[in-house]
Figure 1: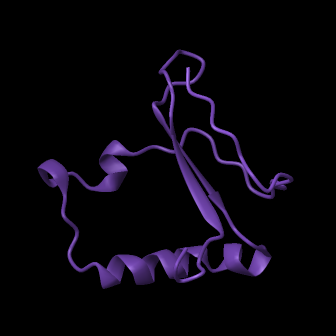
Figure 2: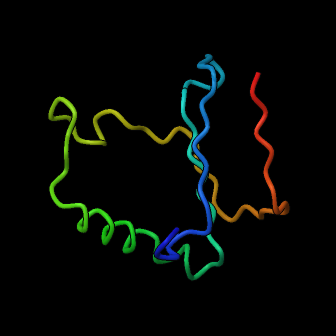
Figure 3: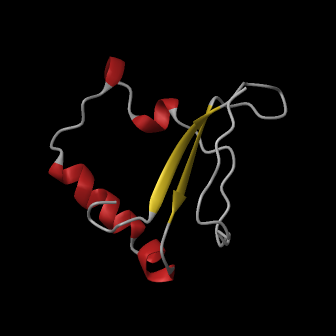
Length: 86
């Protein structure tokens, strides 16, 4: 966000279930189409700035991370998002 590569992000924790087989959700919001289109280039810049990857148990992200659901071109209509904890 400091580099203006994204507008905002949220990390949410949820209960695992058969219908939703995950525990963590990442929601990334981009200010416009241009910001979205250069997202991979910008993320690579940030990764390079941090130096060598610090891997847990020598596992690469692709070995433990999986995108179960991805939705693009979603319009964000609220200025403030409420997070409800149960």
